[in-house]
Length: 285
Image 1: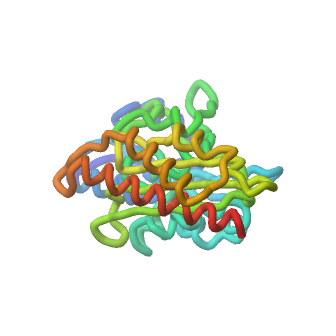
Image 2 (image 1 turned 90 degrees about the vertical axis):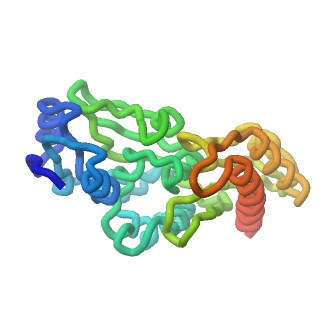
């Protein structure tokens, strides 16, 4: 570590004033599960660390078919919340795959999304859910779709003087859901992660389908062509396999020190089929 100033504002306005004053020389501290390792390895050297844990951003609110998550909602709250289990259970399933107990106890929804690691679970989940992310800055507040929020590797549409305050999603109790991932060890970032959401109509055909991947590009990838291939069709084994193949064929994953791009692409197809199959099974129940 190295010396830096520490500030713990009591209000969002104070936090924004500090960001406005220090700009890109400041870093926001929430759960610290991304920031502390970055500081430890000196990948960032801010002059000021702004601790926002005192701000009232830790609530889960369900109202009129919408679920709102404050940026300081911890991962373990997604696991344990009865409201989440009833209204949007895919969030709980994804949270259980994040890190370990310590990470889930401290890590926050807003921190994970703002860090924007493309192999993390929550960015892919929010992409599949078509989440709306609320951002506050000196010019006021604005709302971004998840697909527009993630702009590249560890990069978002957040300006240096803005703070992600909350995330809003539609409650999806009628959807079947599944999160599948492959990682080197339990709790590691995913080599490939897949999020599937499926709802069925009265005829047993697909009324809605969502399919998003993590770990296959510099940001989450939504497989829109695969989704379109499923809608208004009977979700047979062949139809699900075909949709997974369409999704896989559209991917161009990178190679890294652990696996090749070709292997990652193959795994994406396998996990895509598994996720869709589980989501359909749950939708039928």
